[in-house]
Structure formats: structure tokens, C-alpha cells
Length: 357
Image (cartoon, rainbow, N blue to C red; front, side, top):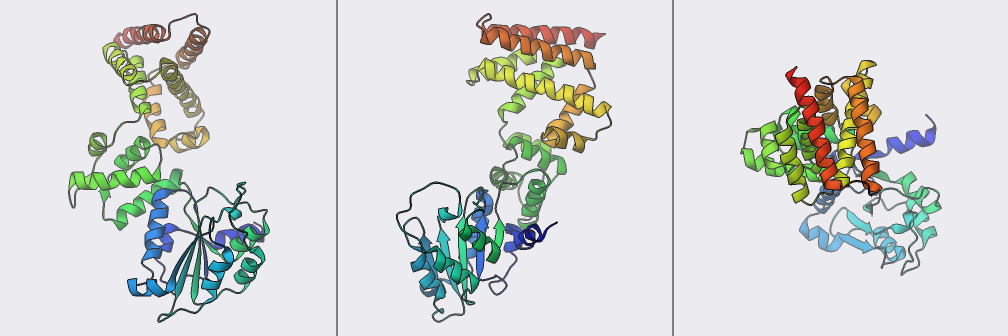
């Protein structure tokens, strides 16, 4: 690992770590970077409580850099605090740190900013609020900010990081939840931390104080995404539950889902079963499969339970039939709603007879 990469990791912390820091521990320059709204909300709440209401009137400055010049903000940052020990200066909309081509209303004095960063006022906490996916690290001013600032990571969470962050949130808010229930929640909200955080609040209210959230609670409270209904459609079709499959299919159509979209999702599910079977037969674990296919572990868990009911060739044949149907519909040779319904009937009838055997 080179020194540049090592330094970047050394000065980067999570929002959870930020919330544990006192005002004294906070360095003179902080960069909040990322677009995960729930994490940004937590960081905002932290900064807002750093000063008392009385101190904020005299020692808190907020500058929108799309309208205010960086020079004005730096004059404030360089001032000593009035009737207090600390000054907090918040800089929002620092688009000049990104690669975004946007014409600013003001001309910023980047040399003055770079000079300030080299020797910041010790009693001031200068905070760059960069709610962007990434910065343009080719720019001199961006390099200067990243070199001097403590970077608070508020980027989108994925995989293990997402699970860990939700577990930490549950601990902070004294929410008890089953492991399987947390997996289902992540799947239901499509791995979106902000939505998961909101749903956890609703689930905690639903079960009541001191009660553990179960899979049944998540299933009852958190609305299913389309993929869940499609998975049910595929499961019922493959398990020979023709009536249930057709009922789900009709409900999906009533809800405004296009047959082409449903066919694509069904094809994706069958392909997932095929890929999961192949990888399992080659010794891959559930976690390895999820990582290899870049699929949520919960979906892999369900796929592993289902793919064992079918032979490898059977899944290959089904996948090919779905691809052929897609061509028939898109070339105008088949009515999309009727053709997909007939395929569901065909698959479920075939699998129903195999189940009876």
C-alpha cells in the first residue's frame, strides 16, 4: 500500500465514529462526503449540537458557496470566537471540488483557501458539506482539502458495511431484531440504508418497547418490492402451483407492471437459479455466490433452497424458452400478455406433473 492510499484511509472515519467525537477532538477542517441521506442527517444533527444556542448566535456561520464567496467564509473562519471557545463555519455547495461543470455566480479565491488550509485557525471548525458521490481529485484545491481534512464518509453503504451500519443503528436506538429479519428488511428496501433506517423506526413502534422484531413483523410492515412478487410468481410456477402463479401474474398486471418487464425479471430469476446451481456444484458457499454474482445474500439464500428441486438441464431449457419468448414478443409475433400467461401455464403444468412423480 502506497503512502497516499494509507493517508487517505487514516484520515477517513464513519458517521458513527464522528458522533462519538467531542468538539475538542474534532480537527480544524472536516469534509463530509457522500449521498446517503440518513447518514447526512445524522452528521447534520451532530454538528448542530456542537454549540449551545447562545454560542451559535455569535460563533456559527453557514455559507452557501454557490452564492457566497469563499473569501467571506474564510474571514469568518479566521476570526477568534466571541464569548466562547470555538467557532463553527459550515460551507455548503462546494461544487468546485467536483468535476461538475457549473458556472458559479461568484469567483472563489482558491489560493486563499489553500493558504488557510495550510494553517487553519485552531479555534475554528471549518466544515465542507460535500453531499456528492465523488470529488475531482485532479484539482489542486480538492487535493488540498482532502490532504488537510478529516473525511467523514457518508457514501452509499453496501454489503457487509450496510449490515454493520444497521446493526450499529439498532444498538444506538436500543432496537432488537432477529438476524433473518434484518436480512429480509435489507432485501425489501433494495439495500437502501436511508429507507431501512426509516423502516426500523416504524417496526420498533409496531412491536412496542423492549420487543424483538421478527421476520413476520418485517413481512407485515415493510411493503414488498416488485422483485418479491416476481420471486413468488417464479416460485409458484416452478413448484407447480399454477393457480397461485396465475393469480400473482394477474395482480402484477393490475398494478401496472408491463409483461415485458415481468418477463425480464422472471428470466433474471431463472438465470439466478441456474447460476446458483452451477456455483454451488463447484463448491461455492452462499456468501461466495452472493459476491460472485453481486446479488443480495437473501436472494441467494432463497435461490439455494429452490434450485435443488431442478436439474441443471431443466433450468437451461427454461432459460432458453424465456429468451425465445422475449424475441417472439419484441418482434411482434406474439401477444405479450397472453404469451407470458401461456408460458406460466406451460411451466407450472410441467413442474406440477414432475412434483407428483
